[in-house]
Image (cartoon, rainbow, N blue to C red; front, side):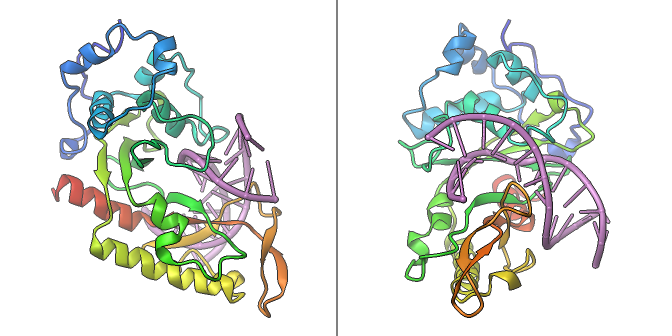
Length: 264
DNA sequence: TCCTGATCATAT
DNA sequence: ATATGATCAGGA
């Protein structure tokens, strides 16, 4: 049997999560019925937004263990050495184009997929990685040309109940929702981006800490603290610095959740 | 407890 | 080394 079983309410899921975790729609069964592991693995990327959202609804309420079983994937014992596992499982489950290409997860739709780990109150557990920060050769770049702006222009957020106390296989996939920044969100992002980029281009990278920015922050994004990449020094001279990435602060993604699912 | 800095796997 | 996917972990 595939993932037909009735959705069992998990003890981890509190009443307040009703808005986040919908029961598996009945039609889901029809949708995945007959899908072999091979078919799922080679599933074509969705061609329309409706198709994508339908697939997304099909995953809501499932545990990672259930989805992994569908896809013939082994659930790791911990994520310490497989931090991107859940995100990649969800990519596969939704038919996102595989690999680490520098393009949206759903190129035809211009949609970026982001899993969003949350606790049982619907609060994000982590910041959200957006993209690497260019540290050189970007003095002329404008906000609308930036990777951050492009990456965040259309995002499919997929909440995932992922408190560390919950075994990985029991973590529950939530209801995905599409987001495009509204005017005020856009402005907050642009403001932070411009401030951070100005510091970078003027040689202030070593002054930037995670606390900078209202919604967007710059933090290390590297194999380890010894990794180096080209950057601009305090006097404009070329230096080597720790590679950085842009991240969305969890307070920001929390607001997105509130907008999508309401207060309560 | 939370947040910032550090880190892990994989593909190109 | 860079880009993809993120979470870990300890000091404030």
